[in-house]
Length: 412
Length: 135
Image 1 (cartoon, rainbow over the protein chains, first blue to last red):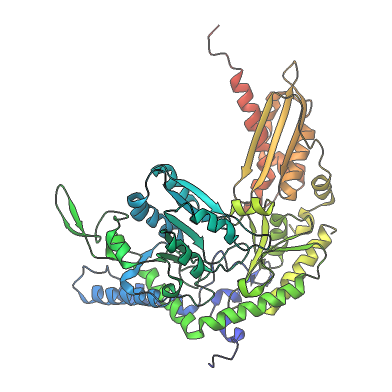
Image 2 (cartoon, chains in turn blue, yellow):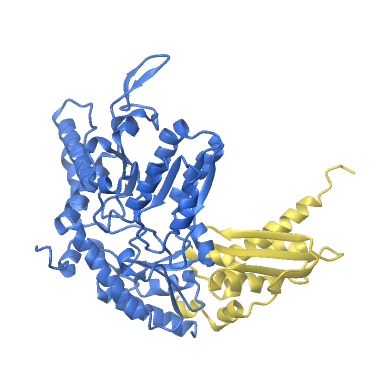
């Protein structure tokens, strides 16, 4: 496939068995991709293949099955690392982004954050990049402050600069907002953090699935992402951490595999990244994630991004004509991912989701695990349609039809 | 049940023009709860009459049509009743009142939020009036 050719959505859709499903007798229009994505048969087959042919525990088994499972698990680690421009020994498998931020909270935060320190995050974060830092601040006697937003839904860099003058210990920022779709200039944010002496962590859950990501050019200290939001299975994700940090950090959980030697009164730790992977790891799903990465790499992340951009533009043209349609997030689509958060007249998002569901359309409604952002927007909730590589303009047209139906029912 | 059935004229009317919406200047009971799934909020205030009846009641909040309409309908039903009556109110009563006996699992909490807040408030009030001294 040439890099200039757009994605062949019709062909891609053939790889996703679930897209053939009917919901309430209608074609499934799946627009809840920021919550979780569907899985291609290549990923499902990788799971079935593992469990059918070489299911075995990794790293400690000397037999053939164990060696095959170990090789597949480590091959997935290499894929998960290379996919974001990292080295495999800097890539820890986690349950997902949430476990990754919590790992940093415990293994890094409890060691380095002292009483009176400042932690900085932003108003547009998912709860998984707020609550761990609240807990850390409370436990260590530190303070948590927030970078504000500008009216267009982008970060207010002026307030960030002010906070940096207070020499924060940590800066936590999302690469891409799960509500506004805002793509933050994380390279700039992390280099500013570095100059101020702060350690940086980037939540990449909404970025890695949708655009090319390279942690070496971002220059962050930590970067987290989730497998299930990028065609992979649930329960697997990754944390990139700079090797020198990982070497110095305390373990996250204690148990098998993360140790070198255990005595009655003390233990020594395994090399990184194994120091952070206690117990039997999620072997099957890591292999599934490897298959998902192969699938995405085969298409090209640049193309995935281009496809979502074209859908975003089409959506803006199509839905903005509807009376009562109010959209949130940057109007400049070059800094916007394929996420459309909106409200429609006085139809509450929850009511709207019920009406759309009847048409086979799956969207998300609610606070999207971003309540501070909802308060900033001064709304209780929004509706959210989020796109991925198997969505087409037909799906956007279906959404428009669903909104029109809701308008008729609510007499908008 | 289709969405056109769920959002009957009655529910939309209560959603847009809720009865007993607002705050009481004087009240004996004030209860609040949210539905974490969607962020619906309901607050209820009750002034208790001399013979333990609901002399006046108001609700406020924000949320979907079902949560706000059901809370409003419930206040109308509750006004004038004895506090003990609140114990009798059931899920089935609420769904019948809304005319939606078959609301799905993701929406049932919206329909029951008002009832939950009313029960929380009244049970808390009745509990605070219990005499533990044995006199």
